[in-house]
Image 1 (cartoon, chains in turn blue, red):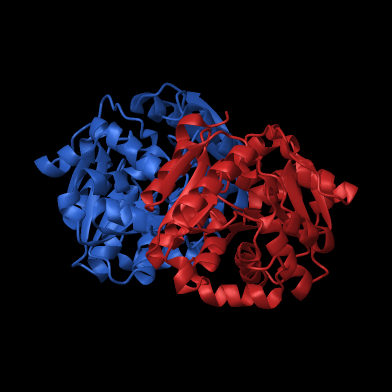
Image 2 (cartoon, chains in turn yellow, red):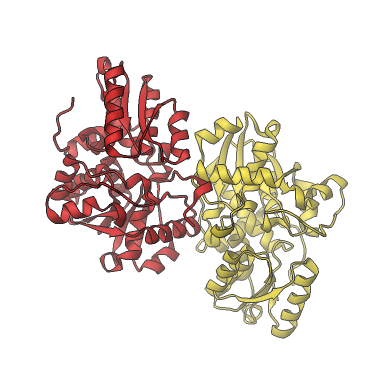
Length: 317
Length: 317
């Protein structure tokens, strides 16, 4: 097992080298109309155009490609609300090893199909964190596979952080960055890079109000649970990890929440104005610009659109 | 009035200079998954990311910026199913002149809103070509505005052709190009450029089966009408123009049709795989790769995604 040490900038730079032939450098987009609407200068980092349609490809490739051959031989396993599972299945298929993916039964069909398309072996479970963890333990006991947690893992955090290295090169003049937070893998990775290289940039985590454990944990200074998340942002229902929380507490400036209504409005604007298909979890960052204009107006804001995997047959409008 | 002479490459190059500070050079995207699905190497020219969300900005800017001051002073006018109207309104607002836009009553709300947002003056009419032309005549008589037809105009054709100049620079190795055809402004402009610079590239027009006048005209060698178009591709319901037909007959290799079902399938794939919001009229080119694989499989294909303006509340699935 990898020691649970917070990754630093060198770990993220090593991850970038490790995964460079397997992930895209995603583009940055902008829109005059959306800038007029928010009063800010928004630069959208398009991780919905990443492989598997989400930033999760970065962390998964970093974890899988870094394994010793003997460990890799028995395959990898995880529990995931979707995008991490697809990413792990893809990375495993590239390395030629098995991927076992525990998925809650209420996962959108598109995300299940993606895992299957990359050759991942899906293990269904009830939609609770306890059920996921139990099902994963059974898989590990049976197969000897190596577990790759969706976010509570320094290799994953370092992998996700690579998008911030790109973003700082693409947009050198940012003043603030809005980052979705669920389990905290993305936010802890991005904050690690930004506070190492450009500490004056404000890092703001954005969480759905119906799954606000990161917001509460950050405020209390102590990790809080998330027993019954209620939000359309299905990728952000997971509870903040311990390691992620420790990093976030040190390296993130603040966390704000947005309502599901604000998330849907943000999605619609991204679809109709930017012409980009972004999933609810991927749109929370832009929702923060709409819901908390006092934090972004007049500023040059990096807005991380973290994923674009949706079921077109069950859109939230 | 501008003489109805077919534009040549020099006209398109002049248009590019004229409009360069006002339109985007749109990106080209690709997708491994879509290539596996079609068996071709598709390069998507993203005109849905153009200003006003469609290629129409190119022709409209070329026409409006090329007017003499005395003519421009009385404003411009057109009838349009939507994107040309929005584009003309934008170009007119940039030049500081009025735009009068005759729009059929069944135009999608998003397209009406776009015209209004750019300060265009909307004149409603019945959804027939005769009603549009009658309403336009009345506007011209009343205002003295200069008419800018959506496609039957060499300035418009030259403007639309500028996207092909870009595409050939961005993708020098194309073997075939798929281009939506309604009134024929885009197809005649693209064909003019390609047959001037790279005549070995096959130029294929793609038309909805429910509005197939270009297909029939091309086959008969004589301009055919389109009395009752029935297709979800609302931007392609207009009948082919005489000038457009003459150019297309000389410079286009063939025209194929696609069904509305194939258009919807193409849209869904573009939305879920490429993560791009493309309207039905903009997706017909990709629908041709699905519907006519014998023409595209194994080839490097330029696929023009011509627009992305949709009502999210009335999606065709």
